Image (cartoon, rainbow, N blue to C red; front, top):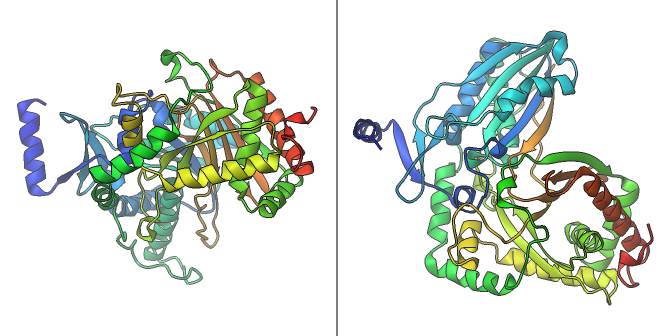
Length: 458
């Protein structure tokens, strides 16, 4: 760091304009175990909020200001350090908001997404910040979209919903101050309340918890669990930053209702039942009976962190070996048992990777290349009189794998998102895997006591 820059930073710290904080464990995972460079746009989480009703640019800007005041990650960037970067949290920051009138060019979602693509795909300056972009796009009379791109280092999927709840609440506050009648909205204060726990306070609590002896105790478990494990696919290192392709589909209630019944009857969970069927699908697809699945965990065990924006989520490697001589239900019981053990030993992934791989080179890991997830973060439930809102997530910022199966409950159905690296797994192969997965689910529910559902004929 140049001397004048260092001096200026010291002055800002001394005056309280900025605070320096160590990286949290999830942030370390991004810097230390990901083959995707931190500044790469593949780490951007992108979404938009469709709003029908009166909304002005001035009100939107003031609402964003209130969110920035409450959520410190909206004022955070990263300063290079000797060993690893540090968080640089500003005491104050002005909202950064752009505006565009799309007219008829933004009438449908496809046109809107195309209009937002440049903002979504542009990298962030991790040092200067801010690490978010908010864009207000007018789609027509009393119809707008609020596009949000935020770097994964300060956000996860839950964070997006926290932002929407804060933003919508702030809009109500701003409208109330402007004289609009908000009497029908219950429980809204005149300002956003302070958070019960800031993101940096959560990070400090996690560092206090994970002392060397605690890390070592968990590392012994994972060293044994992951010994001899191999990746499912063989991908050259140079494709790691390649953008993931996405295919969205659904598992209908006709498929999911029997799966839920099987989970209940077997005394397991919907997650374990779906994961077992997915493992059998991988067995039929690639002949692999021993696959490590990278599964996200919310990392928000404390109620105080529920409203806090930040990167909390972690990864648990779930390993299970299928036994084709046993029935699907017997395999389900074993997969579930092993998953319970693995979840009980969750630890910061950066520390796990360092322990299992012997402190190998930073910027990559060889623990898993397949992601399996059931998303359960809450969707925003703010209601504004005369306003309707709908949130849509376009990119999750999680690109540190080659293939992913992500499921989200939608009533009795499940939304199914397939993500894949095109140069490693083609779209045609993903559709084959999807077909096999559905057949495994159907076969498992029809004959769970027979030998594995991989005997089902497609």
